Image (cartoon, rainbow, N blue to C red; front, side, top):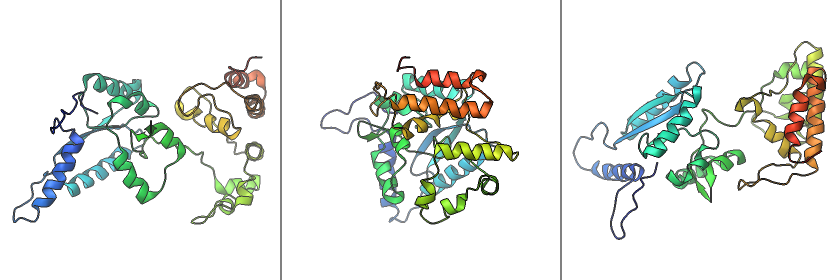
Length: 292
């Protein structure tokens, strides 16, 4: 997080932890040419707070990656894993934001980078290097981690918002007649003709066929973010958005009615009828700004 003290004109002022480490690394690299032994943690120390992942072994893997990086760069890294149970990770961000003290690096879920944009060090230099080496990031990541032309955070795989549904390739081919491998060949571009046929109507058709074959599948709906994040993709597929790229609410469009009707049809076909309640609830949500 940023220091709340501004740099005095004409002077060095107070260095941020990040700039201090950058200069320390440069200074240390210059000292290698001299016949002295490099200290174990010559580049300083970092305190990092990661989301406490519930998948067994995930934290151990991440700790090893961090430890290997620290040993290579001569940085003493202290790692904390912060649970999301009871929103402790969000509360930790809020507490450290108010105290202007705490971890040097924190895992910021979903919309938190934008909420604390005035207190975060820009990550433009880091992202410039990452994009140059690996290519552009997904639009959803850029939307969440970038504000006013500046990167506030760097994307990470733990806790990523990229949540494509998984499927049994063999059952999709056997029961629904859909060859996923032919559609998306490994190490090759997608088969455009087949990929263009993979629509929400095709999804529903495949779901019905697999259900009749004894292997039902579908998309989740619930009160957790993981179970509803995919719904935004449906809105975008129909060209409808409730909030624009700068956070302003939109007036809605006729496409919203189509979304409501199609989602209601899909849920009704899945649960056995709109009287179940899910269809009506979702449609009410979709059409909330549209009136009767």
